[in-house]
Length: 229
Image 1 (tube, rainbow, N blue to C red):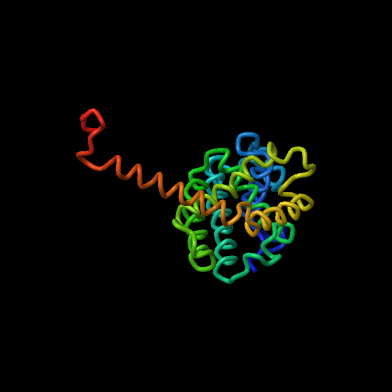
Image 2: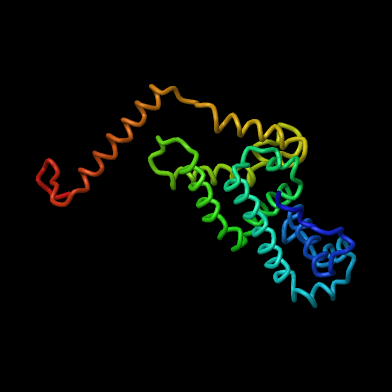
C-alpha cells in the first residue's frame, strides 16, 4: 500500500516538509486564495519568513504542493490498477485518509485553475483506458472516449459535490459520506440502466445517423435542386 503523506511522525519532518504538508491540508480545505502565508505558518509552527525562504512565495509553495500531491495521487491510482486492487478497501477513501486528502486537493486545484491538475487529466484517462482494455467489456466501441467519460464523471462528482449532494447530509468525501458514495458508484458501474433491447435500438440509431452524415459529407454530392452541397 502507498504510504501516508507524512511518512514519519510530523514532529520529525523537516521544516520544509511541515510547511508543505500544512499548505496541502489548508489548500484542500479552503482553496488557494482563501489561505494565507500566515495561516500556513501557524499550522506548520514556523515563521512566514521561513516559508518565503524555502519557497519564495505562496505561488512557489503551491507549485511544490501540486507536484508532490499529484505525484502521490498517481502512484496510488497506478497501484490500484496495475496490482488489481481497484476494488479493495485500501482504495476506499474512508480507509485511506491520505487518498481522501489527495482527492480534496485535486478537486480544489481544478477549481483554482492549476496547470498541474489540468495536466494530470490526460494521465487519468490513460489509466482508465488501460483498465478498460484489460478488464472492461469487449463491446466498448471507443475505449479512449469511454475512458474520458469515466474520468469526467468522477471529477464532476468531486467538483460539484456540494451542489449535487447538499441534501444528503454530511460531506461526500468525509468518512461518513464516503461509503455511501462508494456503494452508489459500485451500483452505477455494475448495474445496467438500459435493457439489451433498448441499447440495441439506440446503437442502431446512432450507426444510422453516422452513415447518413458520412454520406452527406462526401465530395461532389448535390442537393435536390442540383446545387453542390
